[in-house]
Image (cartoon, rainbow, N blue to C red; front, side, top):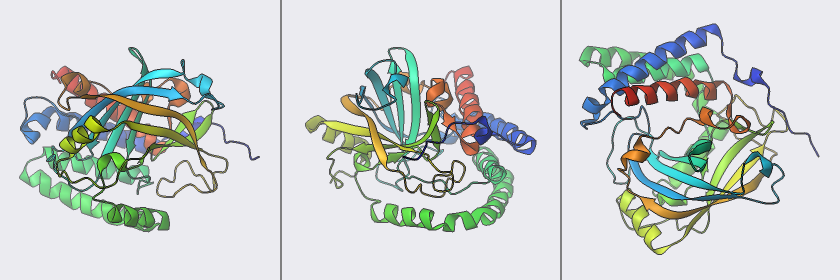
Length: 326
């Protein structure tokens, strides 16, 4: 059997230029979040992304006894919370829309966070170049937070940088997954698989994560997403299998090429999430929570250069919201 690749901090290293751009990005996050109540016409500061909550689910996460690295988790059964959201930076309608969905999973032992896994219903990320991604991210934040002239200027920057990274969108893996999403775009939100996109540590090894629902219909008549979730959970159990895909070979399972599907590595189940309760999507306690994956225990933290950007981004967003009364 092939040996699993072990974690190395070099996977996360950023250049001095990238770190400077990250500082700029964090400043644009601070400005966006500071203005987010006005941008979204609400009486509180919102997140910098995944602003719209559809539902919050509460339940348990139970590790599989035969999972070889189950000792990473402090107990076999842990608390679990899932915030279901739309990826957009602005509030959107509860009606069906472009299916850019998020499942932010928090696994905890009472008040102690064991893992935050921000998952999405698309397995790839189109941009591998850290600097280009940061420039796009900066321009997006400035576009939404700026005045008319700033919007125009940053739209020009966005267009330029998207053009420069456009070849990444045409990787065969990425195009194939886009095609699948288009075919399934009207599927029920609880029926999608949810993915980590980037890599995480599992002990000293490297994995991608996938959350797979069990026996959920793909089609639901209800057009409002929040109501469709509520109606389904009223009459059905909802269970999901948390699976991992190990990295054995950096050519077939690259850590920092996020627009390429991993090959020659099967997903294995590490545990099951069982949902027991539906929490009000507007619950302020949930909205005040942080889902920063760098708050995970060390053995479950993110890996990779794009992933590394998340730490400061989550922190500045959360701190700005907290300092402004969330």
